[in-house]
Amino acid sequence: HLADQVRPQFFLVSSLKRRCVQQTRPCEANHVVSVTLRVSLELGGHAPFIVFDDADIELAAATVAGSKFRNAGQQCVATNRVYVSEKRSAAFEEALAKTVSTIKMGDPLLLETTLGPMVDAATLAKVKDHVADAVTKGARVVSGGNATGGLFFEATVLANVKPGMKILEEE
Image 1 (tube, one colour):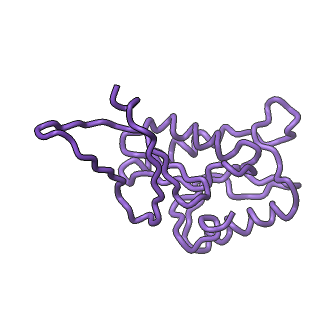
Image 2 (image 1 turned 180 degrees about the vertical axis):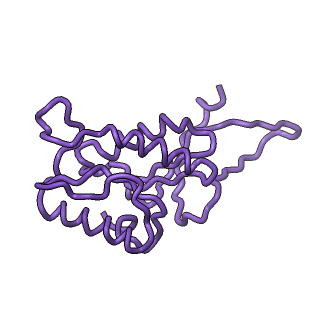
């Protein structure tokens, strides 16, 4: 199988303006080879998740929610930004909001709890600040967006997040 014979390729994408990653290899005359290969893309950190036109939207939403809200989003590999093809953005937004609405905040020692508190008051203040900054600069709250007492903050989905917003650029 050709895919097993090709070494993994790693690319550094230095700009979000790049539309594709391509590698060209010489081949024998009159032979056309079409192969889909696995690639790993370093997209500048901040744990991106990309949803393409042909994605299973329900699976993508469940995967994002599972990644983002595990340990209340306080882990280095938690999804922090999601790029969705324009064609599928409305469907993904709806599916993610529906998935996030099933998250149950509460005591992390209880089995029914799926979202615990922030680790400390400074982290909660930072989350509040990032969400407020995004909303002030034009982001739309799809679900959540509020502190609920103690160190708890609702599972939150924002749309229309753009460069210049703290939530996109800071951890």
